[in-house]
Length: 295
Image (cartoon, rainbow, N blue to C red; front, side, top):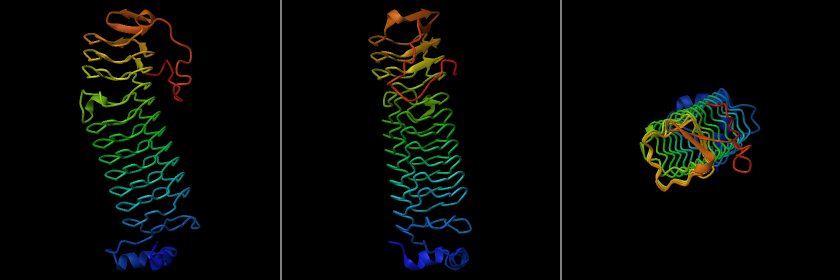
């Protein structure tokens, strides 16, 4: 439970600020507190506060600086966190589901097993964040900065990572089934050309440079390869049943033992294209609606 004295001080912004200036080394204890009756938390120094198990759901925390705080098991679901900062915060098991986190700074934060289901995190700063086993189903991470982040075994089915920077990130065992991976530099991750430990069935891999990628025996069913560069890729034994090919470059690709419906595919000048585009092929497969004219 929260320290009653700390909680009482927190309710008065002026007293809170004076106390924090007087005792800068004290980590305020607001554990399991409910500050939802307060209209806003603005005007308070909330860096390095212990919020463990507190309820901050649905609150408008736009632009606030929570750097270095402890948010383990905190409820932040459906909160407004636009351009807020949680750098170096301990956010294990935090619930940020359905939150609006455009431009949020979570660099170096510990988000192990965090709940980020359908969270809006466009342009989020997640450099070197630990998101191991995080729940990211249908999260929107377009143009997020994930350089050096750990996403091992994260569940990101149907997530949107359009344009995300994953250079040096650890995606080992990450489930990206049905995810939008357009413009994501997959070969720049910690694993380099070896993509075999990433789950990419039904993913939109349009326009990606996967030249020379190791994709042996991968499950790539219903993946979307529009203008994808697979030249020299090792796809031996891969399952490509139902995959969508549109001007897909495959010169030098290894396809021995790969499962493809060659009768439905036209091959010309080392390009693969489906002879007939299926109508609504994704229906029943994923909620994402990839458009044929998207690059």
